[in-house]
Length: 433
Length: 93
Image (cartoon, helix red, strand yellow):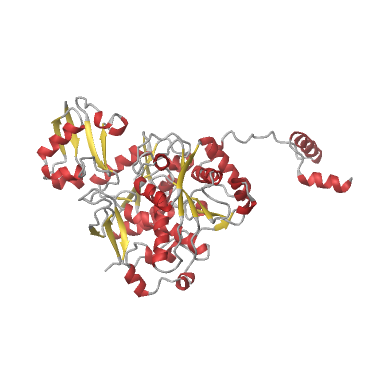
């Protein structure tokens, strides 16, 4: 007997374990629930046992829906969590924030440099168990990369459906794994709707359709790691980018489970959602006090977040409101500025979704919704090398100079005449004078 | 107006396995009345107790979400294809 199974989030009907994401009775989404009493009685899920395990997301396997005998083949997850003092000061305008702002950096998640590697790892563990030979997904890019890579590793066929306007790096980063990439002349919501119909006709394992409940559980490891890396404590605030709205709800579920099993002390964590203004159905609902999603037609450079009709939008709104949090959105120019700010202050190159998160965090500090003395974690979920196109034109390509010292000295003088004089030069002049 | 309605696998056990019907309706309210008459078992799966379209059911007309073209106020055109799609769909075949 498995210690987990699918259950309807609305009517509570149990569905066992099968590739299915909705309840036939009420059409509501299914979720994986666990027998926490059994986990407690096993006693194997403790800080001490976890500490002895390898540094990857499988260290939390008791709280993941993994088939018996599953043997992970990739060390996914356990990405760095670290303080971001320079960014903190810039965002909050206060030095008091320095030790309190953390980056959880899934821009370096294995194997495809986004948090989607976590969800796909869990989905494909189940795809094999359910006997699927072909796995598939609708994707705004990162998921495409992750499904293609993990499928290659697992020896499964992959069919990937994407909006045709996706960033070239994300398309190439799917092609390279040998996946079949189907470009659809439409936006993500149209691709997703088509995939729902295809999943009805073909016996394929769609990670974000019929495998969705299992897939979504993988996101919890992002939350488990935050708690463990903070020294088994929960932060005051989490700022999370939102596309379909699943991640923010699963970080909340992860924290709740750790409290339930006694690994961390209970704490009221505020959840803050981040969206791009050009696609902000969830933040709009939060700001207008609505509990329902009004779908939008996405128009933003943050393509990985461009979901106008988010599947988990309703639950994301609830998570945010019940926690006392808030949601904000930022314009495309703010996204670019925020990508640069994170890079220039902390040496992290994130994709557009990360720019959305950083920009939103700045707004939340300025609105006093997040206070400098509170422990705050920013969720950076993807890598900037995949969305370099948004920085096109930001930096000038300079004319090369000859490999001669005198040329460089001339160049340096010209540069110093234009730019402000660097501090080191000022210092040298003072000392020399 | 004569329109075609596609019914997803998840709902076909309430339609005796019927996956597509052609019927006459001028708007969404009329379409629901037709479906109620034809497939009484389907009714509670499309609308909640207050008569509102269920939160997790999306309705498309010729591939466009009906909410973008007027929702309940949209007037069906001759030959429209209506899709009923769960928002996080996926049956098993």
